[in-house]
Image 1 (spheres, helix red, strand yellow):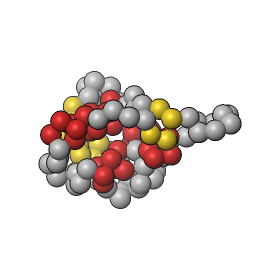
Image 2 (cartoon, helix red, strand yellow):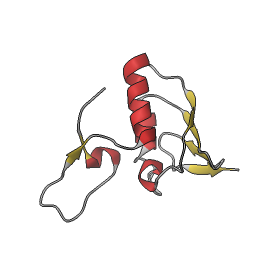
Image 3 (cartoon, one colour):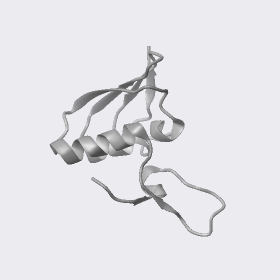
Amino acid sequence: MRGVWPLSDFGWRRHGYRHEHRFRPRFAEAETLIKAHAQFGKLPEELTMYVDRPTCNACRGGNSTDKGLSLLADLYSVKELKIIDSYANKLLVRPGQATVRLP
């Protein structure tokens, strides 16, 4: 699924510009969910994603409950997304909830 979205759709903003820029998602976790949905249609309610680096704050959604991957999980009806990076950090993303670090 290709396209451009306004930054505010993902809760991300760029400052210092006269108008909001549009972009293609370059965040691996977000792009993976978008491509998986495009290829397979309905996604499972529980997913585990393995990534090679720590998840950035924009994907985690900061302290917000409706930004970053939480927004995409809600959009694609994923109830629980676990992200495990190469440093063994584990995150749990749920729609409408802030992302939490798992032990």
